[in-house]
Image (cartoon, rainbow, N blue to C red; front, top):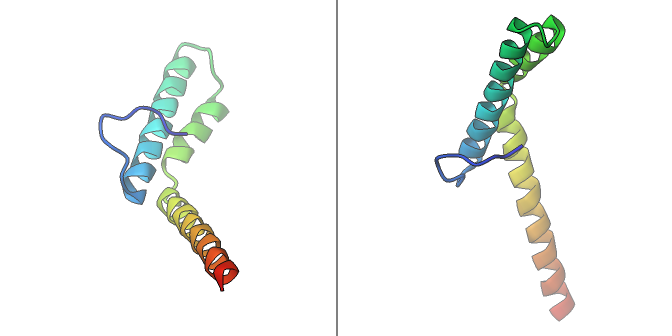
Length: 83
């Protein structure tokens, strides 16, 4: 979900924040469409609720942990192969 941001994405928290900004942007666009009669209230509500999810930071932390685990497993595999 990452788009260009005015700041570097260097941490899990920043990545989660960038995702949040993208969700807010999508919600604002849907609100505008709804007000113009081009979107349903249900779609608007779903987009707004998506912005309010506190799970994004946890989701990214889990992704980072899985990435680190994969790297550790790869390195362990290399070390064991060398033994």
